[in-house]
Image (spheres, rainbow, N blue to C red):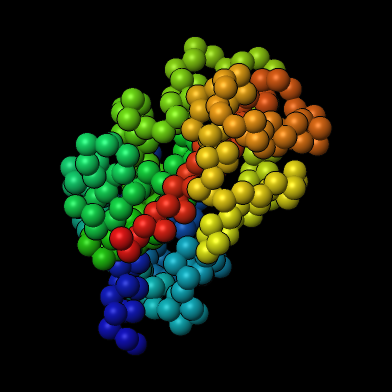
Length: 334
């Protein structure tokens, strides 16, 4: 086996072993909970490990299918790689099971090492997550090793959120700290995503107009009555999927209203940069595509007035982010 692959598999083994829990029940029987199983299993009692209760893979074959599914779906392993992890995992679990039994339960302290390491990584990451400059727009880590993390934020109808782990961040955490994908997900979704969002929200006066609108939404005492937020998000997502972006030619096309424009066109950008796109005079009389779009959504999906405002807020934010993505690609080499 390739040494790099073996190192990766050993990290998975380490992750699984660290995620294994040991305990003692009310009858003073030692029990174990595997990270790929929902229940607890007996493995010994009174500090003596018998052949019946020992932690060997043959005894837990009933868990093999769940284990293999996790190896395939989460870690993208092949069959022989899953076999390797299965055998190595039980070597580690058996070792710590014996340690637990012989120490009367104090081994639980060692199972917290992985959590402590992830806490260390999180704190190190936060310490080195900074705004690029005084414009307070772009958020980078470690002086640009991963740039513009805030681009991944989705400005939904209720609160901003990420719907994926930024690829550059994932690669950085793998290469720098040796984290597995599951550990990266745990670190990101547990609290680091909120840290990035809070950084953006803390600089309200410096962020884009659509972001300021959503910050105000977050500060409302309660949501408007009669707004189905799940429906709002679904409609916004369906509309966004219909929009066609052609970065090579610098064009955007809205087939549902037969509207196309240059991504640099002020008539296209004006509604996206406005705090009140429907009640303000935002310039050219040609700047009505956003009104046509919302009329189409009203006729197609039968939305209410409150839903209309929130759907536009989501669309405005997502489309604005897409234009920034275009400009970043256009100016990357300059």
